Length: 214
Image 1: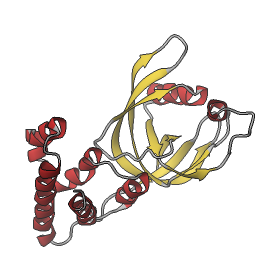
Image 2: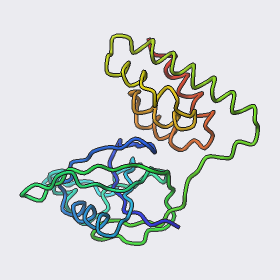
Image 3: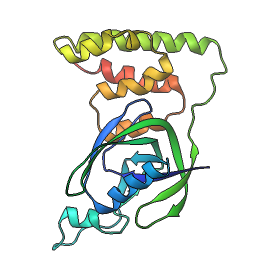
Image 4: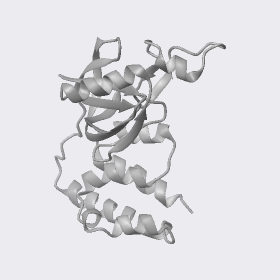
């Protein structure tokens, strides 16, 4: 089992290899950031299924998030990684970078207050048992790259990213995660992709999505 501190954020679906920066102002999550750094613990940032503790009429959203209550029910599958503190302001607010390394699945809550710590197990892809699947993955990878180059014509930023040697030589499996950072899509679709355990299934879904973009 792997223990992680959990940061549930509605509509935040993240993939291994795609770091994100966060502005942390709620007291309980500031404590969590410091705990993760001091104890070398990974932080998981996950999408949420529903609101567990809804705010009342006389509470602001910030007051709800600042309270020591589980405001959101986390999605069971998420990405986690080490935390880097980029800036700490005079009032205690923080800017952090979370370097997502792996996918995990919730198993058992170890700590509730002042923030959640969960025991998790690795959530890995199913092994590629057929050699023919490797060729199929490469073909899907190439088709997505070609389609992205086409639909991003005129978007210099995306064109430059795709033209980089790292992206050109990336393995299809790594690509099936990282490419999601370049495509705007609803969080529910991203969560479905994150939970897929077959790279070909991810690539097929992504290819279908990019082909539908006009």
